[in-house]
Length: 207
Image 1 (tube, helix red, strand yellow):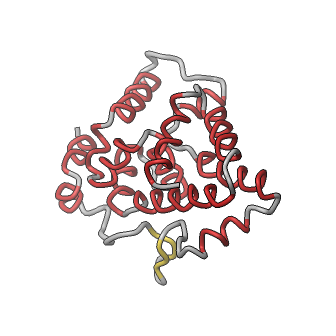
Image 2: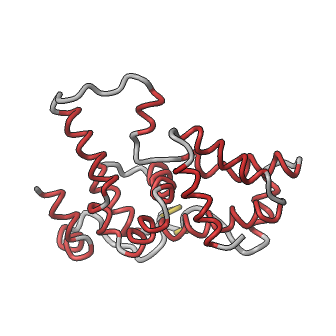
Image 3: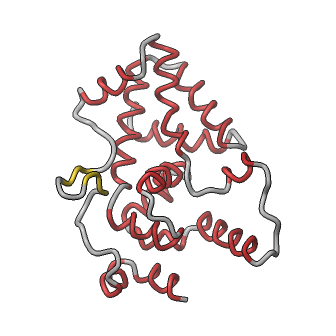
């Protein structure tokens, strides 16, 4: 499986389903029709893509736009960003300041404003509320479920197979700070640096 096939699966899963749970199930079923090596390929591309998004600048953009500093939440946000498709993901990964221009992000911000101003009732159904979050943790688990189904082995062996190819997921490890996003570190509370790196998002935050 090459990177084009990986993105084709991600995008088809969105077109052919209408909820997050059915989307994950679709991916698991589709991957389960393939040999184990292709499932490993898929996970390699997933982790490589996810790592590309886990940068300090994108974390700063996420924190400013959605008001959350959670590293777990940021990881799940990057999964959601991947779920939006290749064009959107690559545009934002290449320039995190573009996050505030994405239609899906603007839609979520408009929804939140409507809820806060009592223009629209907030959903009571937990499943519906999850559909609106800019986080998609479960999307990352699809290859593990498919791997167990096809290989009959524990998903830990998938982690080992991916690691054998020199790929590991998660944040970089900073001895002083623990797990942190990849890329150059900078003071996220420095207003002038934020405005220099993320000018659109700085203007959005200060409006």
